[in-house]
Amino acid sequence: MPSISKKGLSMPESPIRKLVPYAEAAIKKGRIIYQLNIGQPDIKTPSNALAAVKNNDIDVLSYSHSAGFESYREKLAQYYTNHDIKVSSNDLIITTGGSEALLFTMGSIADAGDEVIIPEPFYANYNGFATSSGVTVVPVKSKIEDGFALPPISEFEDLITPRTKAILICNPGNPTGYLYTQEEIQQLAEIVKKHDLFLVADEVYREFAYEGAKHYSVMSIPGLEEHAIMIDSVSKRYSMCGARIGCLASKNKQVMATAMKFAQARLSPPTFAQIASEAALDTPQSYFDEVIEEYSSRRNTLIAGLEGIEGVKVAKPMGAFYCIAQLPIDDAEDFAKWLLESFQLNNETVMVAPAAGFYSTPNTGLNQVRIAYVLKEEDLLRSIEILKVALKEYKA
Ligand SMILES: Cc1ncc(COP(=O)(O)O)c(C=O)c1O
Image (cartoon, rainbow, N blue to C red; front, side, top):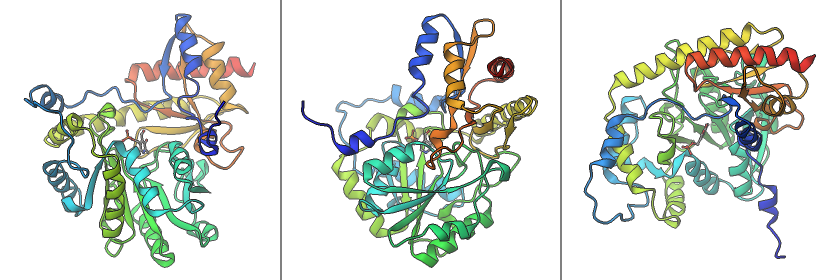
């Protein structure tokens, strides 16, 4: 048989999806599963975005510009400007999801064997994008005890080698929910300038910040124009994960010209989804106010519930819609499988994502899970009840 590539063989499995066969088997048995494992929001997509797709009279579904519709990029630049991110349409390339923006970024700034430093735990697909690009992920550990704050800057400095090309952060963080402070972003800005690196910020959860906390974008730091690259997406902002529209933003002209070559090679982002995304920019602030209030109260319910379970430790998230919970067990993956295969409470169970897959240091986070609070509050309350009983039974 012809052989598979080494790269293909080394592509990591998604820790979020790898328990799916167990969930499918449980569903076949008639179990009801509360899916806390995946960041698929249950929030409605803005109706104006859906209507724009339904009510258009396209005759030919043609390619668009490789950088995306000019009209969309101009309107998006205005959206960012309103959020203290001063960019023009030329600083933006529309991509097929934030995922493609991450791939274009790695392809544009790093060669095979180059290194990118990432605070862990991090969004697990960074491993997949790095493997695809031949890039080595160098983790720097953030700790649950510190609420997953930025690790001391000296720890980044210790990891910088001649192969280091960038520091990549996720702000607010998936899976931690941590929102970096202005001081932390400033510290990162100083270190990338000092060592002439890129600072890549995945800001796909920018709008999800709680308790009135402010999000600081790498794009709004004066003097960082040549270093800062921002990744964005409509997936979470408008609950439009299936649209597959994202964006790569940078003031660095060479980065943009290089990323544009990757964009041209894949021709264009999807047309209907750009129509929806452009229309979504007219979504009124009241939509976001309601969504943030909803997530905020879900967060409060979940965190209070988890803190009420004996032996569970959790860092309160200030953004996004995830948290890492440390459980009084040794092997979260075994526990997560057991929840699906062997446990039920009134025929219901929960699905969580074992957190080890969000770390790249081996044997780390083994007793942690990631929980996404993308379900309505009554389901979250029920999930907490199930988890509480399950932990007692599992340990017994
Ligand atoms: C941190 C982070 N970055 C990027 C993505 C990719 O998003 P998209 O749907 O825009 O490809 C996700 C999706 O969950 C994410 O959580």
